[in-house]
Length: 250
Ligand code: PGA
Image (cartoon, rainbow, N blue to C red; front, side, top):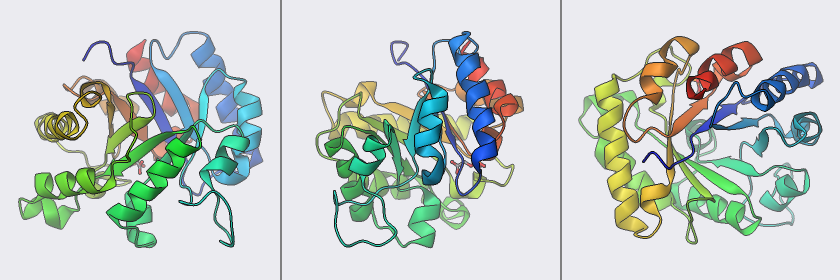
């Protein structure tokens, strides 16, 4: 897996106004100075900030959306298409985050159609999967993740346009993380599923870990086999914390 370029990705969720662009400027400057090493660096701010973030990033880091509609345009009040994200300068889109699956009732099928919209628009889709605490306690983690993977993967995936993020729901925003052994088990399983479902591509698709990644645990989590980067929520809101994570690739 050593040829896979890692991805350090930040998901700002519904946080941030124009003042927060200074954090993106600082992350972009650090990336240009080599502080994120060989990792690709990405911030997904709220949609209101994407165009301005692209300006501030000046090509030094990538900017992405947090969701998109499956269709390219039409009567869908409040939604944003993958083509519109691309037009604003985004190059990535997160789809199927557990908060979207839970708050908006998104099914695997919906997530797959959104991922395919991302690919259609020339974006890289980050497809999120992960079990709830109840599912983990019931021993269903691999079954749940396997079902989400097979149901949500887009047709037409390549190593460039698809990233998978494993985010156990119970670890998101809680300060809890799985053990390195648990992360290794799930990531090995996801790799196996990817190779099975996408024979020519699966070995090279990046698999991110997400859920309470912090500067203090990033080194251990990013060192786990088949972990090809991080999807970071809370700790991506400041350049200092985000760079404390991305700098493990220095
Ligand atoms: P967290 O969020 O880092 O705040 O746990 C991760 C995510 O939801 O992507």
